[in-house]
Image (cartoon, rainbow, N blue to C red; front, side):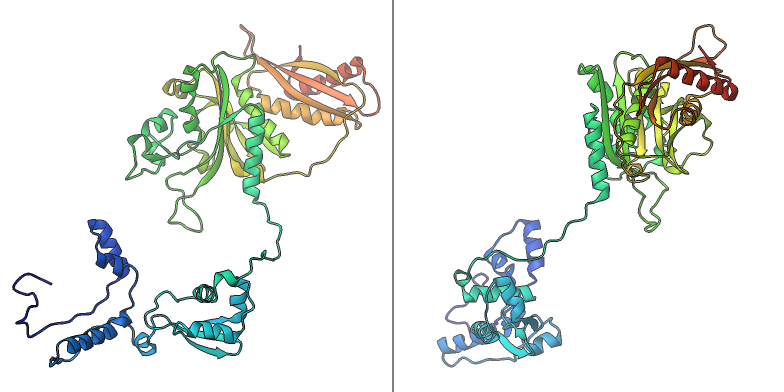
Length: 498
């Protein structure tokens, strides 16, 4: 080693010998960082045992004295070893491994006895002691790879010969796997919305400041990413809906006149943290959907979005879900405060079940429509996806009536301050008492109309489909039923049938 001044030649009288090992992980890390690959790198990244150094040094000294007669060791041997005293004392890198013959045989599919296993391991200089049906295996000083029981299994298999092991099928008990309710619920939601004609999207959880402000949401409520991969992805979204709203205009321009997009995702709110881990931000699972059409339909866009949500609730057998006008809500949940901002407060409703607020459904505000270039006939909803895990009712089979159903409409004229939700809830409640117990019915809204030049009153039209399980109903009977319903609505709500 070295140049002309330090090389060994016929005049050399003193030689310094060094035997060393180096940390394999440090060598590998440095080699990759510097791009240097040498024979030494290859050798030391294989994990040479530090217990070999003294023996290698002794072997080198013996060879030199043999090749150079008369030479002698001029100094004491210095061993700068960085190993625990226990490791040096047992002369093995790892502690003794305790393993049973049964453990080895079960994994190899063999029937080797303790004596046979001991003989195989001693052939490669392992020290083996048998203690109460267990083997204590100590690896020789140069073996760094024998550390756990599975390493011993592999070693026995290799020494015994894999060709001597008969291939047999594994046997074991198979337990029924419990289904993940959350994944099952989300799968059901996906299939139901897809069957209703909606299309699923998967968007980034990161959005731009422009999109946050475009949805009338506050940037101060969003976590900012210090090392974002793009200026367009430097904030965590505070609700899922804006990610979908940003895709509406491009689909309209692509020629799609009417469509619905949905996504199951998550969002975060700055300042709201996990209860059990207060150092981590809370994550809110959400289902968002947006409906958009280039041309207005026969009914308000609100009902397009709401009908899709109601369809989900009905198909998943969810009960006690109500829609409360957003304009009448004084206190909204912290996690829904930003979620509600893209919506028009006068044309939206809060989704409520029991005493918990789950989300918002409705049309979007004028600012949101303008900033995100949405068609005027747009609406959507965003609800906590955990809603679909709760409030389930048992499915009960009910036979369809053998008799034909009767269909009739009823239109009620009410004052402008009355809201649809209160009227609908009252009509459904009264129908349950007026209709015969043997009948089945459905009441659905068809239109809300405010005539020009009126005093602010509105006409609400509902479509009734009713059938009896025991006989054929007559139109006159159904009309009389609606007359009674209208009379009750007039007394309670001041509604007039038109």
